[in-house]
Length: 246
Image (cartoon, rainbow, N blue to C red; front, side, top):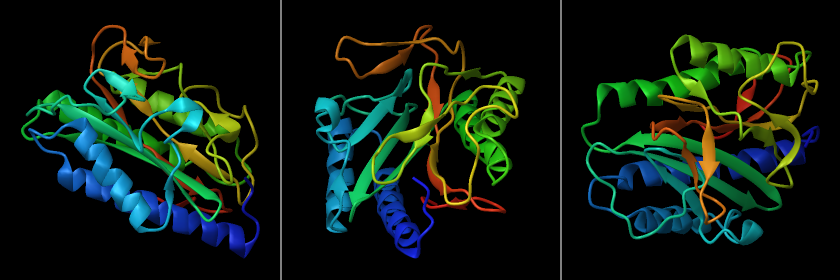
């Protein structure tokens, strides 16, 4: 969506605040001994407390209010009765619909005392996002964001997942254009003032290759390496992008 009107921009900002609040609630709740289903319940309760709808629930049959992915699951992990353990890393991906506007963001959280390499992975996913944001401005192209994320991640020794991308967002959860985390500068869709994007580095400690499990949702690394996911919804401007889910 190109958010050119005050109504559109305010609508996107309001939806972003809901997702931000739900991620903060999840972060406080993630600890050893809780189930991913319990984390999902906290997310859903928070979203609905704002009068919003968890838009992943029922999307193409997806059963829950959030995607919760543990360790080597990159994205789209389905919440269940499995218990989160000390040393796990847990990615929580949330999409909310408020008054006709969508917002989407994700974070990876460390559970208790984690391996130093896992903490560095989590930090690198976040850093890759902000490196990409340095190029997320009017006059550039999607490939400028993508190439920056790829270069940063690979220079630090991480695999960059190819099978999944970021995306446009607005009235729909997924809109044009796709926003890969790899690519070439000066390629892809032009970045225009008001363009709303969900930019989401997904990186691994090993190979970038992944597969989808039989449930049709859960995406896991082929080599069993751990993965981290960091995402925000942003609006492109003439200067620095406006990040709506921080």
